[in-house]
Length: 498
Image: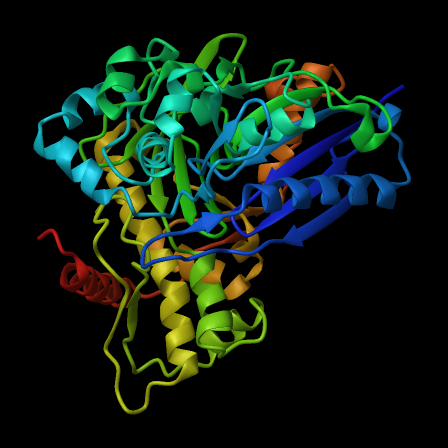
């Protein structure tokens, strides 16, 4: 009897496949990085074939490592970098342009024009989002406008759009399935999160033909089966969720008031608000946390564009560390008398500032500033930005003040004890690190496993969440406030919209 779940975790810098057994334990992992493309300042692209080839390779490698066959796998769950946009030809299955990555800022002028024309209140009311190049809708319009003949092909129904989950689903099923789930659809600027459907007014405004769009399904649903060629026999695809929503599921944040924050390339904090779509007054996003059996659970979200990417910059750009693990060690050796601040606006600033034109800056440099102080500033910047998000969440949803003040964390950066202690100190709140750090992949596995009938429901999954370590705040309050004031001053100096 099939008793394993294969989770595909297709991220911004790498593709991973993780096999879980019937007890939700990790059996095998495979990972492969792929190339990033930066054709201009603020532009970020991926080759869609790199996404597909690396994903297929890691799936095959994980299955081989585990010594399993396709009939041992009850289903596949997909979680993906959100908002990254692929447009492809339905007949050939080939993309007509490189994927435009969620970090990309090329459509900032389009968004500004729509804002200036007074459209943002309507867009926000329907989508829970703001007009920002972060989201998929204006990326689709840009591709249609800049690839020769694309608008004509789209009008004839010959093109398809998808976020990365849809692109992988199309390729895995040999073009039999063009679908997505409600969490990914809610990140496009084209989807009414209250009605649960694509919206014609939004489509007309952003100039995206409905014929491009995938069918929207529950996060746990039957999305079709893979071709036999890939794994030796078909495997059902039974769960899809955007990476941050998958982490909500993997962290078992099923009760309103629970908060999780994922630290990968970027950082994303989500506050479960239950069946109520809370409208933000502090430029946070209202999004679908997950959808099961046609019922949507909502969340408030704060998005930080640069988190782990700052550590990559230390490694690949400045070359002051050889690997990510060295960043915490180096930061711990920094001179505490120096107050160096990094505002990592390499591709603009996300919530709650939303300044697409801002660019990164270092403040407080002296002749004594060295690699240790810069590394510390890069890690502290992640903690300061998380503080800003949580303060905005509490202001938007007063119930969060009385709800759990514990932050559940996951992602590659949380392996650093130094960074997690810094986070607890900055927030003045407990930070909980789970035993399984791969909660994004775990969430995708949970969704597929529930649909396959081999995993239990949400209540039982919540009881399976286990704490590895709790970090408690230990910083002097005066020092904490001084640091936060210095951070606020640095951000204020960086913003182009003051």
